[in-house]
Image (cartoon, rainbow, N blue to C red; front, top):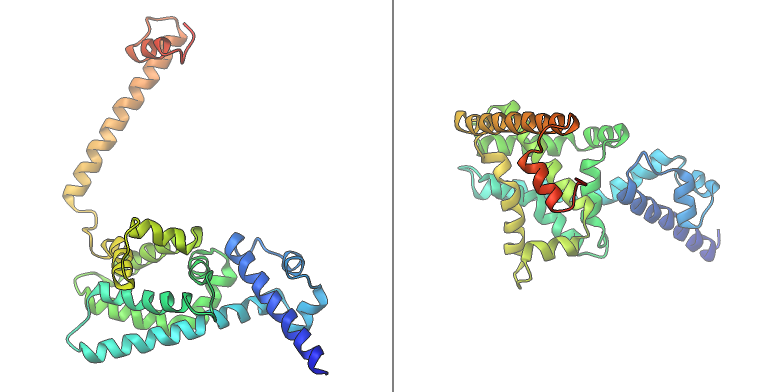
Length: 266
């Protein structure tokens, strides 16, 4: 193969990966097809078969390129922090160890500006293929971080910790997948000039209460019970108001106000 042919093949391969990345970010794994990918990449199905063999293999290559280095550096950072703090780590610091390498890589040329949105989509995409891939390839890192959180939050039962981590990461993933990173940063900074440490601290502060807030205490339950009672009362009042208006009874104060505002014809 001549140098120009090798360059052309590399270009085609990279275009297919780039097209897959953007389509995955925009619509998720199950919604994108090989036809969508080849159209966006300006390639044909034969190119996919030549370079990757299948949609699944193409996606696996993309995830490996984007996630292998990230998770390797996350584990290295966790190990270094545990050596410095053998007495234990704070839960917010452990969250930081998940964010900081990703944030740094998002500024590098190797990952590009869509990196954080890609991470958000990866961890929020419901596709069985994506879920299976993450479980098979990144179980060691999820296990190491789970144990670190368990040591930082010893009062939480393990099943409750798993539930809280699931909700925390889902909430963050949905936010990252749905917004451009610059828009998200602008929202968090509120127009202020702040450094990376303060930016990440603010982001983590939005997530960490999911891990530490009281979980269904009697006081919380009492508040919600009162809301439920009030909801029943207002729902019943609305039903009675509708019934009276349908049967020609006197208009209720709410209906009278709507008539006055022109929202209902008298």
